[in-house]
Length: 368
Image 1 (spheres, one colour):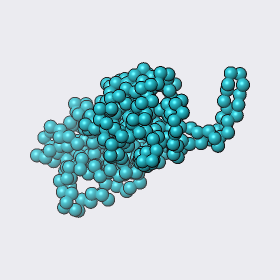
Image 2 (cartoon, rainbow, N blue to C red):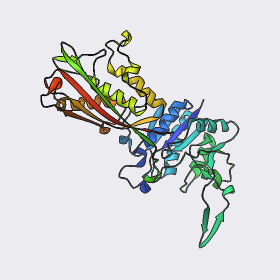
Image 3 (cartoon, rainbow, N blue to C red):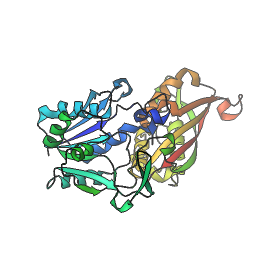
Image 4 (cartoon, rainbow, N blue to C red):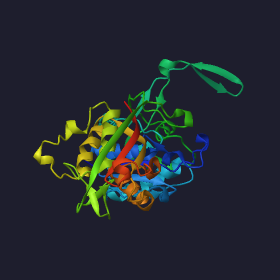
């Protein structure tokens, strides 16, 4: 397996009309470029994955040693050549070059491209146009036959030696690496592309999938000499929450909200309080399998709103720590989490500081 994957993420996104380059815009709860990176990693087809960008500060996550981040060039073709020169020292056999603005390709396409390189020097995914195409030469318009017209996509796959040799000789700007072979009268091999592998160029290209909502609620009594856990962290307090588990009302309400949004009953279905194996279980362990269900079914959290209802402790004192904890546990941007503290004006069990309650509402989106 001597395959390398180059992700071009240096574009200025002029047509996207945003102060932030589109490759770093959040899409399905990830930066746009991360979808390509995650699929390349998950495929286990590549020795190295190279991200080419002019703004390394936007890439805040730490990745494995097989992911390398390098500075790009002014134009797309410059960035591509920089990456090819960079990986030359590894003596690659195959290289796939991909635009970060195409997040919706599949791992199956990656496999098809690499398999095609067993017998070909190039492998370019193409689809037919759904629209009529006009071509202008000077002041004259021509109709192009759709059957003989191809829309090229990325990733584009090549024998490294061939694409490298053509790239270092290229003087003009090119829109993709397939152009190198066309301009040098070299043979191109086409394979079937994917309709959903669309390029995100304008804000309108962002799809609008199905959105679901869920609500959650939990309440537990406070008891002396027990640790208090809220949102996955220990809160200094003289009492803790009584329950079969650690009694973390925030996480319990979040779990119920998630289960409600995906129509999977409630927390008691997954963690019945008459099972000894769940006795004193920490709530982050209860949340983990629910998050796995979301990931396995292509659900993404859009935002989370929380009301923590108690007289003490004061929510404002621990808000930042709780939100940071929830961000890590849910793999959700902190800006998408809101935590409010509510009292009940000294009324009832909560007002008498004998209980703490929590209610949550969550929004999920499911993608095909």
